[in-house]
Amino acid sequence: MFSLCIPSSSLGSLLLIGTEKGLCGMSFDPIRSEEPEPNEILPAYMDQAKEQLLEYLLGRRTGFEIPLDCEGTPFQLRVWRALRQVPFGHTVSYQDIAREIGNPKACRAVGGANNKNPLPIIIPCHRVIGRDGRLVGYGSGMWRKKWLLQLEGRPVHHGRVHSLSAHVGRKS
Image (cartoon, rainbow, N blue to C red; front, side, top):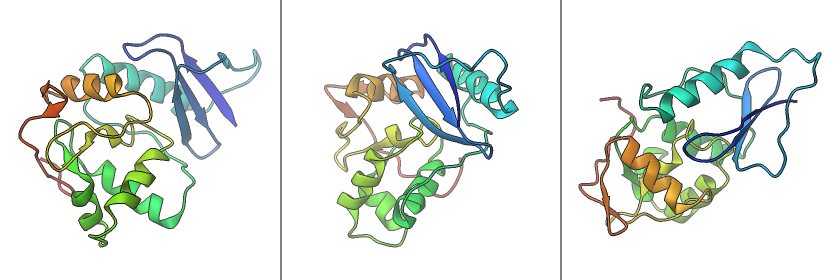
């Protein structure tokens, strides 16, 4: 396992975790900074991930081109794949994702898979909101979800995103 800390960003410090194959985890405000050992050579994708995340947070990037190596149940992996299809600047409901994965009654289970997302931002679970536009469920803090949506041009007023835009599975 490899780790790399981004000490400060608009959302706090970030810890990136990876395997030989790709990025497998990210956490906000890690308890301790895990820097690579002085002689440890990190895979190239770790520096790319750091650079791409910083570009995204500065509003200069809308997507990520980083190898991923996430572990999850088959259901979680389907949800996370569907989340990656939600374009920058768009929002969807839990029901939209449930329909996209072919299980329209699995809204709560989609919420559970979102909660277990190992790569917030890169697997953009912040783009999932309530069917009525309310900001609901974000394990990394609702203030971060609001900030990310506003970064992507989705105004949030009184805890709601106006004009839900369901665009799962197709890039605009």
